[in-house]
Amino acid sequence: MSVERVETLVIGGGQAGIAASEHLSKAGVPHLVVERHRIAERWRAERWDSLVANGPAWHDRFPNKLFTATDADGFAPASEIVDYLVKYAEEVKAPIRTGVAVTALRKTAWGFAAETPQGVIEAKNVITATGPFQRAVIPAVVPEEAGITQLHSAHYRNPTQLPAGAVLVIGAGSSGVQIADELRRAGRQVYLAVGAHDRPPRSYRGKDFVWWLGALGLWNAEARTPSMSHVTIAVSGARGGHTVDFRDLAASGITLVGRAETYENGVLRFAPDLAERIAEGDANYLAMLDAADAYIAHEGVDLPEEPEARNLAPLPACVTDPLLTLNLTEAGISSIVWATGYTLDFGWIEIDVFDEKGTPRHKRGVSEVPGLYFLGLAWLSRRASPFIWGVWHDAAYIAEHIAARGAA
Image 1 (cartoon, rainbow, N blue to C red):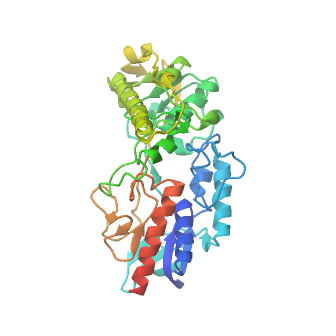
Image 2 (cartoon, one colour; image 1 turned 180 degrees about the horizontal axis):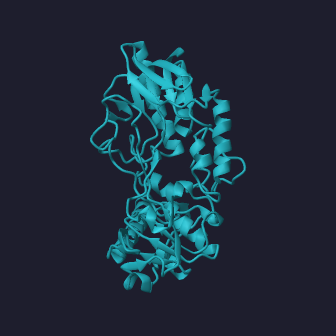
Image 3 (tube, helix red, strand yellow; image 1 turned 45 degrees about the vertical axis):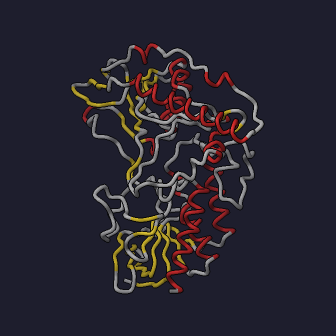
């Protein structure tokens, strides 16, 4: 088997790997980026057809490149995000080698050895830039023998993909609410299982919620531990962007239910906490309005008042008198879409650098093992870390660390 040696190896050709390459080049660090499939593969293959970014184009980008097809206040579709990342990689001359899957990473006397089908790549430094969305999670609730089509949101494409019948969508984050809404608009009977979530306003007093996260210092909220989890946020950029309100979803014909708990003899049982989860989301929503109003008063910013934003409609009947059990056959449910997130999957890294949950032990992406780095994870250094512009700043820090290490 052939052996190739590089100073720094970056594993992953998505937004994190591209950002790492740009900053490594600026720091004069020789490197190679390997990607198992194509540049921005997850944006290509693990998103539904109508997906758009959840943040406006002026925000969800690298600091030194604008989107061209989508207006600044618009929400870029996944296809444009792919084109954006591909062109950015070309502009920064990122040395990306596609179709190279790293199947194992080991520590060696010189540094590290990455095994690939094409041979071994040895490196003094390794940046793992495989992102936060590594292995789709489908809880073991409904068995395969139930005869229900089950798929994760990562593999959902559009309503025509699913067999005829009602659909149960499980998950109250961005993916779950957008997929449920799309299915309902396609004429499906939809049930939506709602768990814990944050529910920010899409915009308030003329500013998008991502602007408010910056003004209130929330994007820079620092990670308290390396294993902090990503917050489930119910927000949407679909159809020009709008605030997600579960009351509106219920009014459109979607039946809200609680968190799916157990399944037996064709009957799915839900947690009796739906109203509590909705109330928590409302409290989160109102707290952001309060924080924004306080900021405006303190800073003397001239932004239009929006008192109607605090008007919440009465809770729908499906919340005040929720279904606690549902016979899937009697309800005509033929499909379940699990919008239940992802977990990390670093089983290919054969190095003792993970805690009992499989989370890398690191500080701002610098692991306990000299020369091994992680980039693009949720809460790597702060709340912004897994987003396009956030990962760019984290990449700068790691590149500087590698350059200093080489000079030491």
